[in-house]
Length: 180
Image 1 (tube, helix red, strand yellow):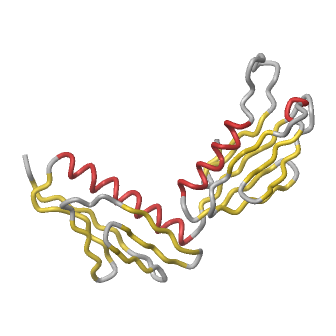
Image 2 (cartoon, rainbow, N blue to C red):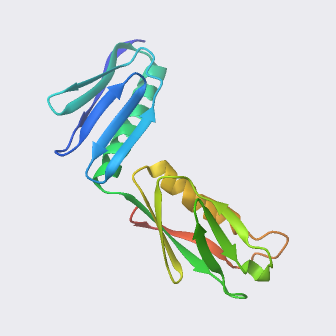
Image 3 (cartoon, rainbow, N blue to C red):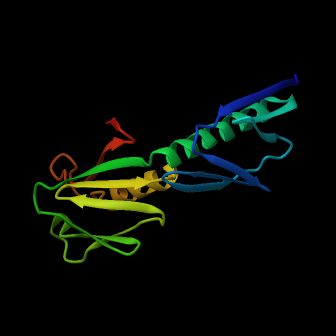
């Protein structure tokens, strides 16, 4: 059954949103974020400080697409207002772990006493700070910040050992201000 369905997003002051073809660009005080969407037959209108995403004859799949695009644009607005922040903790019970940032790589040295450092690839567009045993990742893009945090966790995954005994690693302790 087809019905008219649309979502509205209010644009806070100091934020500018443009649509160029399939790409949506959001500019704000913290930086700029852009993402490509497959709008298909959906219409995106920017009027009077509000963005309207919708279609006159929406099916269930169109409604899903509208809600997804709305969520992404809200995250982009939130990111350019205040950067997304992930915190990770370095936990070491057997050997002290050293983390060193070189370009777009993080070298994790002395993990479980290994001679060769483990290499963690980091996406471009993130800020990383290391304070003793806390790693802070900040980014305008939520997906990049989350991917960088996940890369640290997967790089320090313990294999071929008992996880109850070898509890070393780098673990996420907060996602965008929410404690885990």
